Image (cartoon, rainbow, N blue to C red; front, side, top):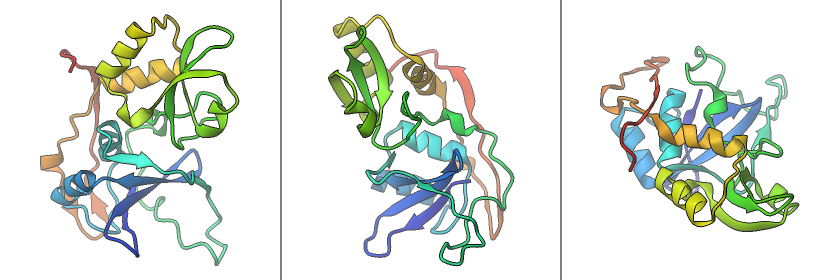
Length: 204
């Protein structure tokens, strides 16, 4: 369950969530925080994963350069209580978030054209990009449906791996998250937002 937080030393906001038994930080743009605020979500509040997925898809939420950290047992006094388990699981699976095709990391992902053994489009994190012979490399938050289609066409890339095909489905999903109807019932419960994963009838 994502939780909104505010940086102590600046006015920006970020989101913590648990993905694959790791804590992942998503940094928010000012527009992303504005959307959450308008939905009644304030510092320290939990909200449905569907909203975070929508922010990720629009580029208003992105992972930073430090990468996710392993979850630490709550019996460890040095670790603050984790805010994730005390609400029911979100209806949207964690697997909807794009990950590195080689190691599953969510950190600083790029869409890349790998030249070995043949030309193929894939999604890689920084460490895995350094292990490959890469031609084109584009930060994933910049890759919209239209840009992805144009890159594959211009570069004449005929083969994509599962990470890219899954990302195509992610971009094609209808994220009708109903922000305007999000009901925030303080202090502990709030309505979860569902996602219609049908394909859009019109491409941007």
